Image 1 (cartoon, rainbow, N blue to C red):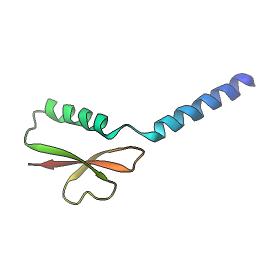
Image 2 (cartoon, rainbow, N blue to C red):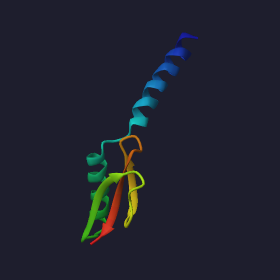
Image 3 (cartoon, one colour):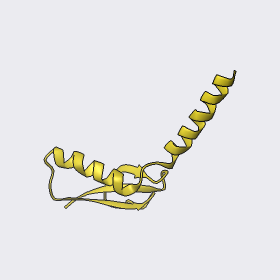
Length: 74
């Protein structure tokens, strides 16, 4: 029973860290690397508040889902 409680406690801590999400700049760099690897050029990635992406494609969310990373072709 003690092992079960320990496992539940560790999972709840891990879940809280996961819910916090990645920092936006870290995720933005990872997305840019993937886009560059596909040979794309003349684009921009912008971090905006959630729901503020008016003229671009949302390609990621960060900081616990409060912000979005928007891809725009240049």
